[in-house]
Image (cartoon, each protein chain N blue to C red):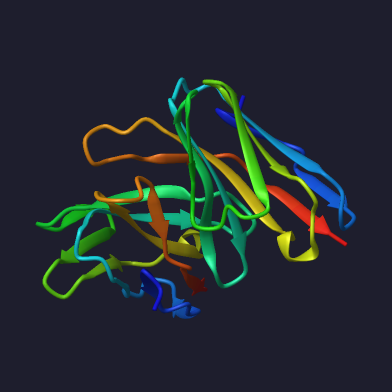
Length: 111
Length: 114
């Protein structure tokens, strides 16, 4: 089982739609969580951190459910420019001292 | 100018050749990383370094070696390249603040081993 699992998609949605991605992680010792965005053939970039109480950044909302070990990202009012791959990222605070990336969920927003 | 640069951006080589990928950063970060990305597999950590004297293996270090020449430079070597090392390679840096540990990636090196 992968340590961080995501539905690869693609999610094809019309402009203006609301779309949600989920991600599950296997290590209950995980302490920090992030969503990164990666455009085709480009480098990943941090989209937002994910906090236990949930957090929002404009049209983007991230939620964390520690009991069920999953993270979600909600995008409201989708724009064409939101088309990208969204990577779920977990940081372990024991053992390996680096980030673990999911394989990503691809979003295609259509006009 | 980009904060994290990688050279070369593209490389085609033959099986058995020694290859070095270079990464430089002007962000002043202590931590540097090398990842590879294959279609459908996401980013896999090869090696990471938390300062000049600290080198650690990641998930997939076999067949690779690294050198941290200075705070700003971290190079990745393939001693004897093989076709399944064909991938997109990313260098990244970070300067963690609390739990944040935001990583900043270079533009990537596309390596093809024939």
